[in-house]
Image 1 (tube, rainbow, N blue to C red):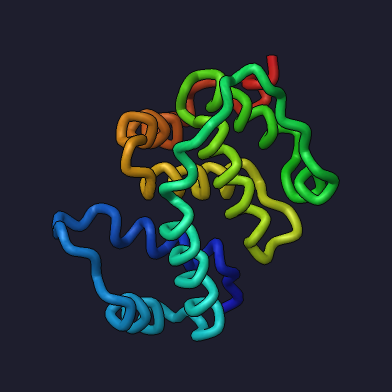
Image 2: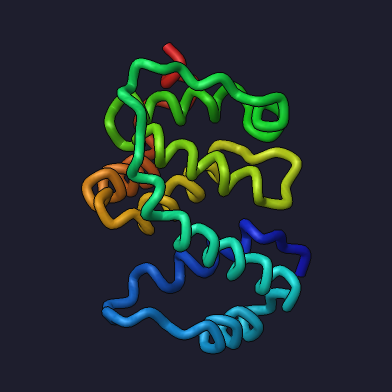
Length: 161
């Protein structure tokens, strides 16, 4: 298989999020499940490390500014995310789905991925994973889940206008 870290993360998120168990599966169980699904050990290790760092940074993400500041993207961020993705993040922030802190955590997680470019669908997955790991953002997570399922709504280009 020729997957990258984001493919492993999306698979893991899709296949573990709906489980009703209150306890988290242990790392060896996750690794075994991913190996059985056909993912390479290197990508599994990198994906689980990505998740570990996300969970360790999650409490810091609740800190945000007063909302008056405008985010200027670094050249590396502009290269990784296109204008449509920037508009999507702005839309989420303006509608209260992201705080300045969670937006920064999303950008941090995107920049750690091994892809040269992240498309809008991939960005949505990263945002969903970040919000899922935020203890105070259950409402934002559920609203974003609706946005991800709704293909009939406005396109991400509409978020720029």
